Length: 299
Image 1 (cartoon, rainbow, N blue to C red):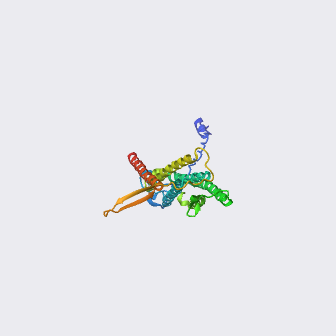
Image 2 (cartoon, one colour):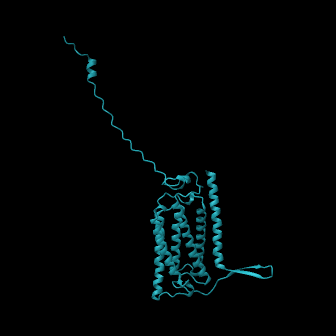
Image 3 (cartoon, helix red, strand yellow):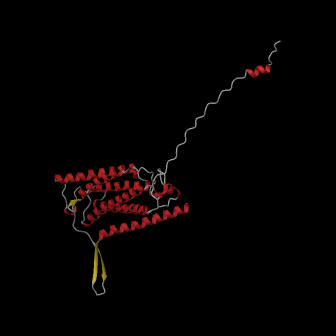
């Protein structure tokens, strides 16, 4: 005889099959960036040593360190050109021309791009600022060159420096800035590495950068004073003339043992511009020292 299956055995045989769980997907881990071959074993993305201690005198890469000094030299050259123009014009009682003011402003724009590179890090867009300012300067100085060639612009004898007029030298300077920017952009090692700027780098480059910024700022203020003194709030003339030699001198006398006095005379405006540079360097060194001390206290 056949026995009937129990209810429990039937219910167990009729259980619904379990649905298998869907497989979980785990994204692959991002591989760590290999350390660069630069000094200090820093990564390609920046300076690990500087993140640990902002007072270490270590460049992100040797190329960035070299590019910083090239930018500092560029600011120094801009200061020299503006200072020479101010000294020459003060010395001969000449007001700046309207296009000359535009050229001087373009020089400040070039220096501003260099300062951005130093304080915020090497970036292609900072070189773009330099290129735009240099193009404006080339246009202004080129217009003066064309005006002089056509006879519309008369050249004052005191505007000539080493056989060439101010605007001719300005055109060469701006053209050189464009070429220099192109070369720096082609030198990709100088800006591909992540550079946080000299705010986090307490080295000699930061001292010179702060000094150049202060020196440039004082030079700009002196230039503004010169424009307001000669042109007022209106537009300066397009073709200024000199009033004659206005220069003064500082004379230093030294008494010798034999009763013979020796004297040294230095042009006054040159002394003033050199004094501004010396004061700027001292103030820049003080600012760098205070920032370095504050970084040690917060470390």
